Image 1 (tube, rainbow, N blue to C red):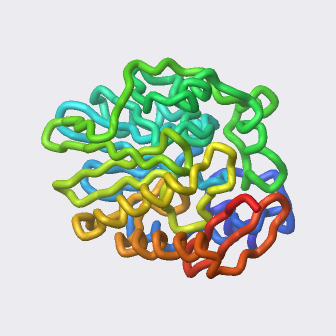
Image 2: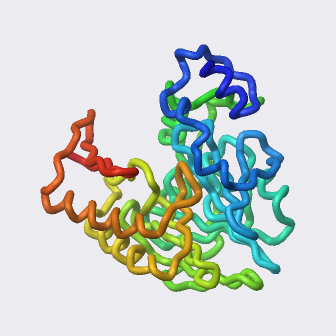
Length: 302
Protein backbone atom coordinates (compact mmCIF):
# COMPACT_ATOMS: atom_id res chain seq x y z
CA UNK A 1 0.00 0.00 0.00
CA UNK A 2 2.84 2.42 0.83
CA UNK A 3 4.53 1.68 -2.50
CA UNK A 4 1.31 2.44 -4.38
CA UNK A 5 0.87 5.70 -2.44
CA UNK A 6 4.34 6.95 -3.34
CA UNK A 7 3.97 5.88 -6.97
CA UNK A 8 0.79 7.91 -7.25
CA UNK A 9 2.33 10.84 -5.45
CA UNK A 10 5.38 11.12 -7.69
CA UNK A 11 3.94 9.78 -10.98
CA UNK A 12 7.23 7.96 -11.59
CA UNK A 13 8.35 4.32 -11.33
CA UNK A 14 10.01 3.31 -8.09
CA UNK A 15 12.92 0.92 -7.90
CA UNK A 16 12.32 0.17 -4.22
CA UNK A 17 10.23 -2.15 -2.08
CA UNK A 18 7.67 -0.81 0.39
CA UNK A 19 9.88 -1.48 3.40
CA UNK A 20 12.71 0.53 1.78
CA UNK A 21 10.70 3.73 1.51
CA UNK A 22 12.19 6.35 3.90
CA UNK A 23 9.99 7.37 6.82
CA UNK A 24 9.89 11.02 5.69
CA UNK A 25 8.50 9.94 2.32
CA UNK A 26 5.66 8.00 3.93
CA UNK A 27 4.32 11.28 5.34
CA UNK A 28 3.82 12.79 1.90
CA UNK A 29 1.88 14.48 0.42
CA UNK A 30 1.83 17.16 3.08
CA UNK A 31 -1.75 18.40 3.68
CA UNK A 32 -0.85 22.06 3.07
CA UNK A 33 -0.48 21.37 -0.65
CA UNK A 34 -4.09 20.26 -1.07
CA UNK A 35 -5.30 23.86 -0.83
CA UNK A 36 -2.92 25.09 -3.56
CA UNK A 37 -3.33 24.99 -7.33
CA UNK A 38 -0.87 22.55 -8.87
CA UNK A 39 0.53 23.39 -12.29
CA UNK A 40 2.15 21.19 -14.89
CA UNK A 41 5.95 21.12 -14.70
CA UNK A 42 8.15 20.75 -17.78
CA UNK A 43 10.55 18.74 -15.59
CA UNK A 44 8.92 15.91 -13.67
CA UNK A 45 11.44 16.16 -10.79
CA UNK A 46 9.60 19.27 -9.60
CA UNK A 47 6.07 19.87 -8.42
CA UNK A 48 4.87 23.43 -9.07
CA UNK A 49 2.18 25.23 -7.12
CA UNK A 50 0.68 28.70 -7.48
CA UNK A 51 0.82 30.08 -3.95
CA UNK A 52 -0.47 33.56 -4.78
CA UNK A 53 -1.04 35.35 -8.10
CA UNK A 54 2.34 35.60 -9.79
CA UNK A 55 4.11 33.55 -7.08
CA UNK A 56 5.03 29.94 -7.77
CA UNK A 57 6.54 27.35 -5.43
CA UNK A 58 8.90 24.97 -7.23
CA UNK A 59 9.03 21.97 -4.89
CA UNK A 60 11.36 18.95 -4.82
CA UNK A 61 9.48 16.29 -2.84
CA UNK A 62 11.62 13.30 -3.81
CA UNK A 63 14.68 14.37 -1.83
CA UNK A 64 14.64 14.56 1.96
CA UNK A 65 15.42 18.28 2.13
CA UNK A 66 12.08 18.95 0.39
CA UNK A 67 13.54 22.18 -0.97
CA UNK A 68 11.25 24.90 -2.29
CA UNK A 69 12.41 27.57 -4.72
CA UNK A 70 10.12 30.47 -5.61
CA UNK A 71 9.43 32.30 -8.86
CA UNK A 72 8.10 35.79 -8.16
CA UNK A 73 6.83 37.57 -11.27
CA UNK A 74 6.03 41.16 -12.16
CA UNK A 75 5.12 42.68 -15.51
CA UNK A 76 8.73 43.37 -16.56
CA UNK A 77 10.95 40.76 -14.87
CA UNK A 78 10.96 37.93 -12.37
CA UNK A 79 12.96 36.82 -9.35
CA UNK A 80 13.87 33.18 -8.87
CA UNK A 81 14.53 32.83 -5.15
CA UNK A 82 16.88 29.82 -5.10
CA UNK A 83 17.52 27.23 -7.78
CA UNK A 84 17.21 24.01 -5.82
CA UNK A 85 19.26 20.84 -5.64
CA UNK A 86 20.56 20.75 -9.20
CA UNK A 87 19.02 17.30 -9.70
CA UNK A 88 16.20 18.48 -11.98
CA UNK A 89 16.42 21.05 -14.77
CA UNK A 90 15.42 24.28 -13.04
CA UNK A 91 15.73 26.41 -16.16
CA UNK A 92 13.37 24.09 -18.02
CA UNK A 93 10.86 24.24 -15.16
CA UNK A 94 11.00 28.04 -15.02
CA UNK A 95 10.60 28.34 -18.79
CA UNK A 96 7.15 26.80 -18.44
CA UNK A 97 6.10 29.57 -16.06
CA UNK A 98 7.47 32.79 -17.57
CA UNK A 99 9.27 34.31 -20.54
CA UNK A 100 10.35 37.32 -18.50
CA UNK A 101 14.02 38.04 -17.75
CA UNK A 102 14.90 36.15 -14.56
CA UNK A 103 17.04 37.45 -11.69
CA UNK A 104 18.35 34.71 -9.40
CA UNK A 105 18.67 35.56 -5.71
CA UNK A 106 19.76 32.94 -3.21
CA UNK A 107 18.29 32.70 0.27
CA UNK A 108 21.83 31.52 1.10
CA UNK A 109 24.44 29.46 -0.69
CA UNK A 110 24.13 26.00 0.84
CA UNK A 111 24.24 23.42 -1.95
CA UNK A 112 20.53 22.57 -1.88
CA UNK A 113 19.61 26.14 -2.82
CA UNK A 114 22.11 26.90 -5.58
CA UNK A 115 22.16 23.73 -7.69
CA UNK A 116 20.72 25.42 -10.78
CA UNK A 117 22.51 28.77 -10.46
CA UNK A 118 24.88 27.91 -13.32
CA UNK A 119 21.94 27.79 -15.73
CA UNK A 120 21.10 31.49 -15.34
CA UNK A 121 22.83 34.64 -16.61
CA UNK A 122 21.85 37.06 -13.81
CA UNK A 123 22.75 35.75 -10.32
CA UNK A 124 22.98 38.20 -7.43
CA UNK A 125 24.28 37.25 -4.00
CA UNK A 126 25.46 38.75 -0.73
CA UNK A 127 29.12 39.80 -0.61
CA UNK A 128 30.64 37.39 1.93
CA UNK A 129 33.64 35.09 1.90
CA UNK A 130 31.23 32.18 2.48
CA UNK A 131 29.35 33.08 -0.71
CA UNK A 132 32.47 33.45 -2.84
CA UNK A 133 33.80 30.08 -1.70
CA UNK A 134 30.52 28.30 -2.39
CA UNK A 135 30.26 29.85 -5.86
CA UNK A 136 33.26 27.73 -6.83
CA UNK A 137 31.07 24.62 -6.56
CA UNK A 138 31.68 21.38 -4.67
CA UNK A 139 30.86 17.68 -4.73
CA UNK A 140 30.89 16.62 -1.06
CA UNK A 141 27.61 18.16 0.13
CA UNK A 142 25.86 17.29 -3.12
CA UNK A 143 26.87 13.62 -2.87
CA UNK A 144 25.58 13.48 0.71
CA UNK A 145 22.10 14.38 -0.60
CA UNK A 146 22.00 11.04 -2.45
CA UNK A 147 22.98 8.84 0.50
CA UNK A 148 20.70 5.89 1.39
CA UNK A 149 17.38 7.15 2.72
CA UNK A 150 17.77 10.63 1.23
CA UNK A 151 15.88 10.00 -2.01
CA UNK A 152 12.35 8.66 -2.38
CA UNK A 153 11.67 6.93 -5.68
CA UNK A 154 13.44 7.33 -8.98
CA UNK A 155 15.99 9.98 -9.87
CA UNK A 156 15.44 11.69 -13.25
CA UNK A 157 16.18 9.59 -16.30
CA UNK A 158 19.72 10.19 -17.46
CA UNK A 159 20.83 11.72 -14.14
CA UNK A 160 24.40 10.67 -13.32
CA UNK A 161 24.50 10.24 -9.55
CA UNK A 162 28.22 9.45 -9.50
CA UNK A 163 29.20 12.80 -11.02
CA UNK A 164 26.56 14.84 -9.17
CA UNK A 165 28.08 18.03 -7.79
CA UNK A 166 27.19 21.67 -7.21
CA UNK A 167 28.42 23.39 -10.35
CA UNK A 168 30.28 26.72 -10.14
CA UNK A 169 28.33 29.83 -10.99
CA UNK A 170 29.13 33.44 -11.86
CA UNK A 171 27.89 36.14 -9.49
CA UNK A 172 26.89 39.05 -11.71
CA UNK A 173 26.41 41.60 -8.92
CA UNK A 174 26.26 41.91 -5.13
CA UNK A 175 23.09 42.64 -3.22
CA UNK A 176 22.77 44.49 0.10
CA UNK A 177 20.34 44.73 2.96
CA UNK A 178 17.53 47.09 1.99
CA UNK A 179 17.92 46.69 -1.77
CA UNK A 180 14.58 47.11 -3.54
CA UNK A 181 14.04 45.28 -6.81
CA UNK A 182 11.24 46.55 -9.06
CA UNK A 183 9.71 43.73 -11.08
CA UNK A 184 7.06 45.90 -12.72
CA UNK A 185 3.88 46.23 -10.65
CA UNK A 186 5.59 44.39 -7.80
CA UNK A 187 8.56 45.39 -5.66
CA UNK A 188 10.63 43.04 -3.50
CA UNK A 189 12.96 44.11 -0.69
CA UNK A 190 16.10 42.27 0.38
CA UNK A 191 16.44 41.65 4.13
CA UNK A 192 19.79 40.46 5.45
CA UNK A 193 19.13 37.63 7.93
CA UNK A 194 22.55 36.19 8.83
CA UNK A 195 22.76 33.37 11.33
CA UNK A 196 21.96 30.12 9.56
CA UNK A 197 24.75 31.22 7.23
CA UNK A 198 26.62 34.54 6.91
CA UNK A 199 24.89 35.25 3.57
CA UNK A 200 21.29 34.41 4.51
CA UNK A 201 18.55 36.72 3.26
CA UNK A 202 14.77 36.93 3.26
CA UNK A 203 12.58 38.74 0.73
CA UNK A 204 9.67 41.01 1.59
CA UNK A 205 6.82 41.90 -0.76
CA UNK A 206 5.22 44.60 1.39
CA UNK A 207 2.31 45.43 -0.87
CA UNK A 208 1.13 41.83 -1.01
CA UNK A 209 2.10 40.95 2.57
CA UNK A 210 4.46 38.13 1.60
CA UNK A 211 7.64 37.20 3.46
CA UNK A 212 9.99 34.67 1.85
CA UNK A 213 11.93 33.44 4.89
CA UNK A 214 14.58 31.18 3.34
CA UNK A 215 16.14 28.84 5.91
CA UNK A 216 15.88 31.34 8.75
CA UNK A 217 12.44 29.89 9.42
CA UNK A 218 10.49 26.87 8.21
CA UNK A 219 8.04 24.68 10.17
CA UNK A 220 10.33 21.69 10.68
CA UNK A 221 13.78 20.96 12.13
CA UNK A 222 15.72 24.21 11.67
CA UNK A 223 19.42 23.55 11.10
CA UNK A 224 21.68 25.62 13.37
CA UNK A 225 24.55 23.16 13.84
CA UNK A 226 26.98 23.77 11.00
CA UNK A 227 30.29 25.63 11.51
CA UNK A 228 29.08 28.68 9.57
CA UNK A 229 26.09 29.19 11.86
CA UNK A 230 26.21 32.20 14.20
CA UNK A 231 23.63 31.87 16.99
CA UNK A 232 23.81 35.51 18.07
CA UNK A 233 23.20 36.66 14.51
CA UNK A 234 20.39 34.13 14.12
CA UNK A 235 18.58 35.49 17.17
CA UNK A 236 18.84 39.05 15.82
CA UNK A 237 17.55 37.94 12.44
CA UNK A 238 14.60 36.08 13.95
CA UNK A 239 13.80 39.15 16.02
CA UNK A 240 13.76 41.18 12.82
CA UNK A 241 11.41 38.78 11.06
CA UNK A 242 9.13 38.47 14.08
CA UNK A 243 8.90 42.26 14.15
CA UNK A 244 7.44 42.18 10.63
CA UNK A 245 4.69 39.67 11.45
CA UNK A 246 1.97 42.30 11.81
CA UNK A 247 2.70 43.52 8.26
CA UNK A 248 2.75 40.04 6.72
CA UNK A 249 -0.17 37.90 5.62
CA UNK A 250 1.80 34.83 4.63
CA UNK A 251 5.28 33.40 5.23
CA UNK A 252 6.78 31.33 2.44
CA UNK A 253 9.60 29.08 3.79
CA UNK A 254 12.24 27.27 1.72
CA UNK A 255 11.61 23.73 2.97
CA UNK A 256 8.69 21.32 3.32
CA UNK A 257 5.68 23.62 2.82
CA UNK A 258 5.27 26.97 1.01
CA UNK A 259 2.71 28.43 3.42
CA UNK A 260 3.08 29.31 7.10
CA UNK A 261 1.29 31.60 9.55
CA UNK A 262 3.24 34.77 10.46
CA UNK A 263 2.47 34.16 14.14
CA UNK A 264 4.96 31.30 13.99
CA UNK A 265 7.83 33.81 13.77
CA UNK A 266 7.33 35.07 17.31
CA UNK A 267 6.94 31.51 18.57
CA UNK A 268 10.24 30.47 17.02
CA UNK A 269 12.02 33.52 18.45
CA UNK A 270 10.64 32.84 21.93
CA UNK A 271 11.56 29.16 21.76
CA UNK A 272 15.08 29.95 20.60
CA UNK A 273 15.56 32.32 23.53
CA UNK A 274 14.35 29.61 25.90
CA UNK A 275 16.93 27.23 24.47
CA UNK A 276 19.73 29.73 24.90
CA UNK A 277 18.64 30.42 28.46
CA UNK A 278 18.98 26.72 29.28
CA UNK A 279 15.24 26.23 29.90
CA UNK A 280 14.70 23.43 27.38
CA UNK A 281 16.00 19.89 27.62
CA UNK A 282 17.82 18.62 24.55
CA UNK A 283 17.33 15.31 22.81
CA UNK A 284 20.78 13.94 21.99
CA UNK A 285 21.58 12.69 18.51
CA UNK A 286 24.83 11.54 16.93
CA UNK A 287 26.93 14.67 16.52
CA UNK A 288 24.28 17.19 17.57
CA UNK A 289 21.30 17.86 19.84
CA UNK A 290 17.69 18.67 19.01
CA UNK A 291 15.36 20.98 20.93
CA UNK A 292 11.78 20.07 20.13
CA UNK A 293 8.70 22.29 20.07
CA UNK A 294 5.24 22.09 18.54
CA UNK A 295 5.62 22.06 14.72
CA UNK A 296 9.32 22.96 14.69
CA UNK A 297 12.63 22.16 16.38
CA UNK A 298 16.26 23.30 16.41
CA UNK A 299 19.18 21.09 15.48
CA UNK A 300 22.26 22.52 17.19
CA UNK A 301 25.85 21.63 18.03
CA UNK A 302 26.46 19.93 21.36
